[in-house]
Length: 432
Image (cartoon, rainbow, N blue to C red; front, side):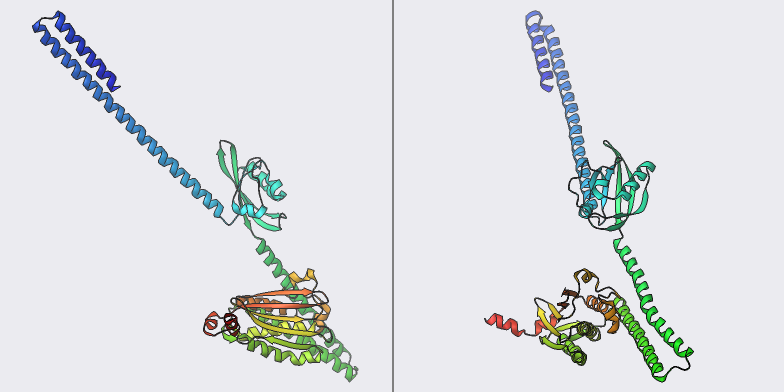
């Protein structure tokens, strides 16, 4: 544009000067020259003004473009932050349209249900939960937030609290969000509590009923023979002892679950040997051979009384549920890099595979009749599990029905002691 105006001004000036030379006398030339110079100055002014407006408009366009780019960048950052927020939430988040077609699911939802393709599928087909589908339809009808408990059976059984609310409208239609809060563990714990109360009531009711029956018989039969009376009184004492054992085991279990153990540095191998010495007489009386393979110097930080209780419970079970002329092998060794392992293997009756997941539950018995006959309370393995876990360890079991069982306790070693105490086995390996 500036060159066009300049070209026009120069052309006009040239024409004026040419006309002045041909037609105009000397005085007239001066006037025309002055007029031509004025035209040139005016043309230059117009050129400068046009240039100023051009560059001003260009600068505004550039500023608007930069502002637009900054806004787009900020929006992208916000979208990325929102995406990270949704993906990082520990609860499933699902977004659907009003027809219940899935439009988005965060990573937790993908893990819950194993979604692969997200488009064109209904949440009913993806979650197999009719309860969730009905709740979604209710939210769409009310166009407001609804909350309710729902159950899922796919891919695993779960109980959750579902919250569904209206997000708003987009170019593609309405959107609704679904948030699921898993309460499966709470449901399981509530069931465990109910089972525990029922089991405790049953365990106490049985001996109490026996004691009352025996006492009433003695009270009502004044002519009862002395031998019969003594037998009934012995039965009362046995049932009372059984109640005492249950109460003591419940107290041990309560302490293991609620109170942190008072720990100290101990040698696990010495504790195992003490426990073995305590049960050796009972093993011999039942015709069960007891052998040990205990590695020396297994330093752990633990409550010694609780550790002995763990070993005694495992040994007692191995003795009482063993076969005649059976064997028990107690092993203790260090597993690299920092675990102490206690193994109690027996040749007893074993545990059916369907019972293995439940043997650490309170009052759960594989052989209920034999357990009561041997004086068991059904709490021994539950005590073992809670004591070991409170010490940062874990319990494993391998069993074959009618062949035998191996219970394995893994505890963290006291690493400070290990770093200061040379390990002969490791020294031999390094020498080799």
